[in-house]
Amino acid sequence: MARRKKIYEGKAKILYEGPEPGTIVQYFKDDATAFNAQKKDVIEGKGVLNNRLSEFFMTGLNNIGVPTHFLRRLNMREQLCRSCEIIPLEVIVRNVAAGSMSKRLGIEEGTQLPRPIVEYCLKNDDLGDPLVTEEHIAAFGWASQQDMDDIVHLALRVNDFLSGVMMAVGIKLVDFKIEIGRVYEGDFQRLVVADEISPDSCRLWDIESGKHLDKDVFRRDLGSLTDAYTEVAQRLGVLPRSAGTTKPTLIN
Ligand code: TMP
Ligand code: ASP
Image (cartoon, rainbow, N blue to C red; front, side, top):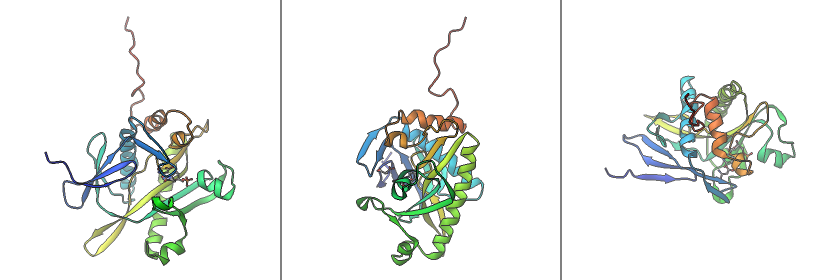
């Protein structure tokens, strides 16, 4: 079989041309990077976990009427998605101060924010994805005012959905990043949640212990990343409880 045409290779995923027009295949790699790829490793199994977890979150969003690019999972590492034009922004929603916001504003990590705060970063690795304001976005034409209204609405719906899903399994959704794509339908364009939603792009803290169950485990050298992601997948029922942890048991 002819190898599919590669469209784009990013730090954690490869995009291939899909089987039908208007579709792409997203392949989840095991590569982990942080601090704009200054820190790198290959974490065996991460791609498989993120493929399953992103499927779970995107399917849930589709089911409650929040449009996403996700169509269906193809295999352990690949999913079929609608092709879309990615708006060059990282849309971040924060419920609790952490990470770059804590550093920038001197707010202690873990401080509950009075309301969800939406931030935008320009997707540009050479510049280190700088924080930008709606003024920049409008002035440089990265998105229109109507797009921005739709983006905030989508981001807050994703926040409500993910917060609830995680809360139900004892995990606090501290913050997350999504990317938004434009899908063209005839003369109309529609915005959809694109890219991935996984512990690579969220901060997830165990409510009881405060334990990190997200990519900060890798960024901050806090232990096994796959153990953390497996824990999230098991709590959500995406993986069976016994997966990877069963030991042979003696039968008398
Ligand atoms: P930050 O506190 O480092 O700005 O990150 C905010 C959220 O965005 C956090 O959940 C991690 C996620 N994120 C990404 O998905 N990709 C990135 O490149 C960065 C810097 C953060
Ligand atoms: N995804 C970004 C990188 O590789 C940063 C991060 O997630 O911390 O470098």
